[in-house]
Image 1 (cartoon, rainbow over the protein chains, first blue to last red):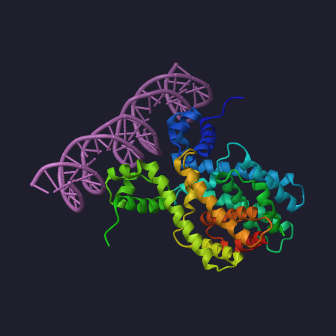
Image 2 (image 1 turned 90 degrees about the vertical axis):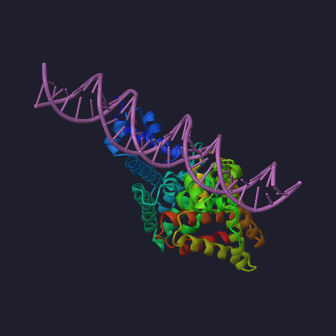
Image 3 (image 1 turned 90 degrees about the horizontal axis):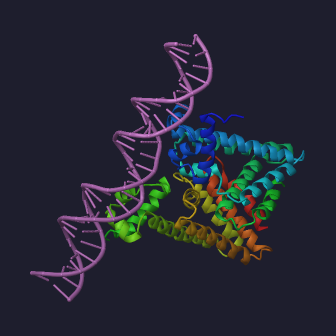
Length: 182
Length: 182
DNA sequence: CAGTGGATAGAACGGTCGATCTACTCATTA
DNA sequence: TAATGAGTAGATCGACCGTTCTATCCACTG
């Protein structure tokens, strides 16, 4: 029950601070929150860019696992599995403290060639692939397009949850999901 | 045919630079691009925050006018008017140089209490209201919900256009728009 | 012509940025 | 026991941040 090493503490703190304050947070704030020496950051990650890149990757793996878990909670029916995932999403954005999708925010604010942007796009494509597995399993006539549309709806929920918190996104998105599922 | 004054030059330059580089651009870059004295910025806008706020407002008015024009190009049929607006949107995100929705990017990266965030939300709500006028005109059974859904789809196009430029958003969004219109 | 006010140019402010550096502690281990 | 290496603490670097300042120019107006 010893506390994790500097590398993991940095990742955990950066994961939290970049979410609440964006990728523009200063390294000083991350170092202080992680209670880690300045030097450790540069030894483990080579710099702020490296840390951000690994934070994105770590967060993506975590979120994808959460999505996979939600799918499995939906049982064996692919349609029900997708519905359950959207229930998770609408719940996430309605929860207090939600400030927007970490990956969309990072992608929109990082310079175009930043090493983390590739990881962001890869994450979104893996989520699309998760949807594609379900649309294939349900025998959808156009499973790939349907998966891309479900990703669009998922991102719409994440964005709209930040921009228009007064909207009831569960009610709004549900019939659109059904329309895509066919 | 004289060149516009410092205030308008600042707005124009800030509009361009905050789009290509985000709201995090330095005032030095804006001043240099606008060829304006440092002091003029603080006389006209009180500071960077004031400039950003007015830039958001000016850009919003401009974009809303463009949307209104697209609607009118669709003729008198509300459904066709909405389709025409989505054609504009999918064209915008497919055009070279598109980097994402200025307002979503700004909202996700400005601190929560920034004076510009209210203008951003107001802009999105005015776009929703534009959709609502159409859904009411077409006699939609649930016009307000439909308008909120159309805004979600519009934002989805803007976000996905930045994150997954390889996707054919016109093809993807079209049937979803039709499903919402009923 | 004198005066007024907007615009300009640019120095300078304190603060923060990311990054590098030295120096010290401490556990492991050869 | 001596050495190694990771971690810590903190000074320091140059660059940039937004902001304020003085000083000058210039068109307009009295």
